Amino acid sequence: MWTTPVRMGSASNHRPNLMPDVFPMRGLGNRVGMGRNSSAAVRKRTARVLRRGALHGLCAGAVGVAAMTAGEKAEQALTGRPDSHVPGRTFRRMPGAAMPRRGANLAMHVGQGVLLGAVRGIMADSGLRGPWASSMFAVVRLTNDQIAENATGTGAPPWTWPRSELVIDLLHKAVYAFATGLVADRLAARDAPGLRHARLRRGRQPDVGPV
Image: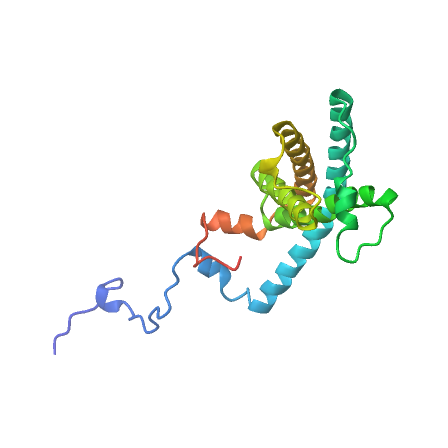
């Protein structure tokens, strides 16, 4: 019987695909997130980011408090504004607080700024950095102050303040937030989960990660 020889490279010489792509991957993010990133590994890595960021933030918050205090003293020298004792009164009205009047103002002023810096440190180590992140953090700082002051009755909502007092307070909070952010961003690891996500796909994408 006469048979036609099969030439190499012809369509009849191709081997069929016996393993079809049953689970198609919808993007590069899935390829990165599958296999090597188990849930346990991701949780462990996230905890490490949070711990490292909090430690960085405490250091950054201390610098931010120093910068804010220096700015306040310079502003008071120009305007003649007296020291504010609202932080101390707020602290003494907090549940469980037992602090003499003399040290309460300094404890609240410094302690609040240092501890809140942990938030900015976690932001930086997560990938939230730069002026945008520091602007977000300024709102966090102002909100934290106002919750404490209004809950204890030592303060009133900011929109009821005299405009000059409001501008001065916002200025000092901005100095604190941006000084804290500058240090936190410098201390943060070079790479971060949020930055890796952004390099793969911009925005919040359900098919990216964990990265």
